[in-house]
Length: 212
Image 1: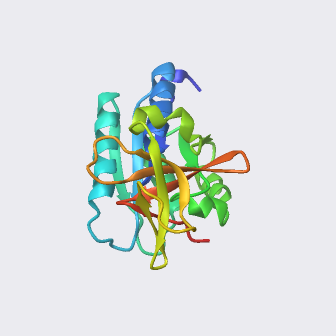
Image 2: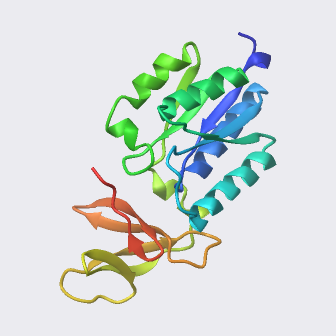
């Protein structure tokens, strides 16, 4: 297939890895002289308005357009799965290469708890699928977050909340990286266990744990 026929689709969802995926897709599109589309799939169930999520979407749209691409939002209708929506968009747009993110704690919950990749591959046919690791936070923190500062996660009424001071023996010490362009305590909290760094998501001062 000639390079002029290539077409790139980047799939992003709520979380800090979207920016990195778009950057990767933009570089690939420029290398191949191919059109760039960025897709986010809205859930079938209507959600309450989430200003932080809307900020992510606005940022992705701006970044996509700055790179000469087209930003798309497609709803996941009743009876459909995310792979169905991605595959339908790819067919409609004549996409030849798809980029998705793989993270252990993110929207791509389906990847780690099912056959997301297999289902997507079955639906996209000859389209190339790129799975990009997006959990490598240290490489992107300086682009998406402020400089970190010492902080604690303090248990309160069954939840862990962010604090600059330790309170009680069960407080977890770490480093908090606040997201850029936000007035809320939302970002990533770095915890070191047995010499290994783990990053957990903080939204408006509270630790958001993934559900298994």
